[in-house]
Length: 193
Ligand code: G4P
Image 1 (cartoon, protein in one colour):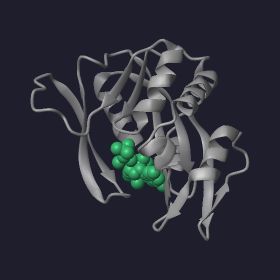
Image 2 (cartoon, helix red, strand yellow):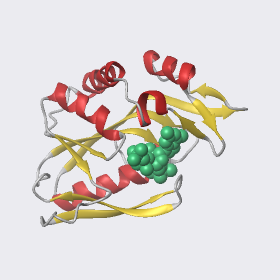
Image 3 (spheres, helix red, strand yellow):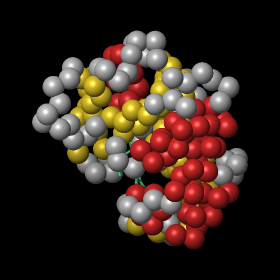
Image 4 (cartoon, protein in one colour):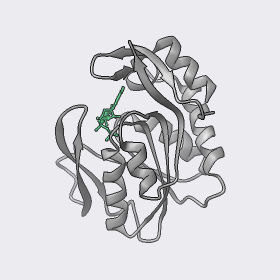
């Protein structure tokens, strides 16, 4: 997706530890025009499927997931990392290890918002090690829902997440994939549109 590539090239900063900082349009300030384009693009790529629900994880997945959900006219559900004390609902939960942040955390979704038989599309901003998406798949399984695919804005192709998900037969659509950070220069994987 050229628009996203251009923004990454213009504003992305490669930090030590192979982290791409995109705070100016994704992770801190959000560009709604770009987020809308991204939502449209995910819709275009998955519209052949009947999707009942979009599922993501707070925080940064929510913006793209919301625009995607808008185009599908389907609800967006986000897994919580910080469940409020006043949640008394029954929940599905899964443990997720973040390699980037080197800590494990629990994600949870109220049983009210995913039902058996739901056809789910997962959306997230980054795919690195794939642990976040695997946690969402685990939650969908617990609910008896099926995951029809995963839409990712930025796949870090040199980390194992993409391979893990494709090997599991998940239909994965990444809008841009980064091949490497070569001396802090961003190299995209060629086949991505
Ligand atoms: P995973 O998400 O594929 O499992 O990989 P990992 O555990 O390594 O990622 C942990 C967090 O770091 C995730 O966000 C992920 O989106 C983010 N992340 C991974 N690589 C990069 C990167 O190069 N740049 C940026 N900006 N983020 C990266 P999170 O903890 O869920 O954070 P948030 O959604 O609350 O912001």
